[in-house]
Amino acid sequence: MNDLLNSVSKPDLIEKYGFPLMYAIVILVVGYFVSKLITLAFKKVLEKTKLDATWVGFIQNVVNATLLIFVGLAALEKIGVETTSFTAMVAAAGLAIGLAFKDSLSNLAAGVMLVLFRPFKVGDFVEVSGTLGTVERIQIFHTNLVTPDNKAVVLPNGTITSGKITNFSAKPIRRLDLVIGVSYGDNLGKVRTILESILQNYEPILKDPAYTIGVDNLGDSSVDFAVRPWVKREDYLTTKFYLLETIKVRFDEEGISIPFPQRDIHVFNEDK
Image (cartoon, rainbow, N blue to C red; front, side):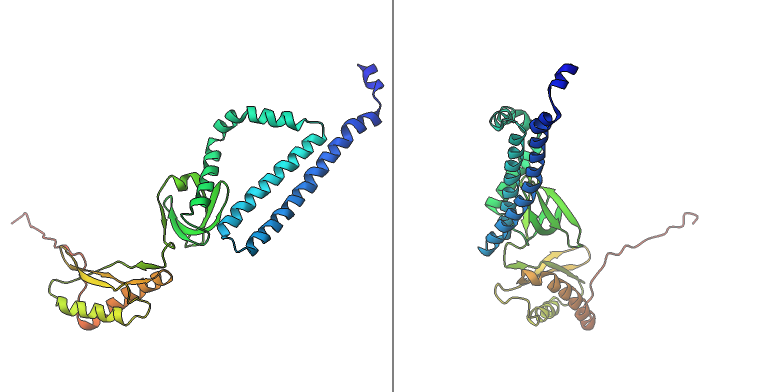
């Protein structure tokens, strides 16, 4: 054994193993930064074409991953690994890898579906998997949302496509549904007039489609009016807040009561 080691000089060992390993490390480091630069340049080119932000982010991730794979293969080849046999080995193990990473592959396929069929795009306000938020980014395996209270939520793409998707930004206008209860003793014609006056004098409420006001339910303690105006989607919340506050103030001024649940309690004296 010692004779074998002595027969191989240190310069030979360095030339045979040291230099290739050093070159491989250089390829990995330089390749990593070059792939980042190419990806950023590719992103800028895509942005100049005014391509949708959803596509830009997704394609950027795919390009970066592809470049890194080529860099890794180049480094392996430099240290003497046959990349053709390595590729064949990976292909042969494809079934096992697919089973081991079936969730990741499912998320990848779901990410492609999200980009192709576009149930939502970056910037849309959606509800997916029981979470409300604005779409910040659609990536290969997961989607990033920002909730209304500014929390970052990361959802696997597979869970998104397998459930219900509600896109609140898909249409330019939305209908606001309010239920306003009044007392049975109040004049319903007067109530309707007050509600119409409020809706007609608030500019964000659209004239077309026209709003709807009508008795929706005769409840246990109130007559419930359905108040349904149409607004632009960006005016939805501000209109809701305005109407609820204004209706309460106007009803107080006009002597219209808004009933609230009441319960009579009868106390019996068993001693009598």
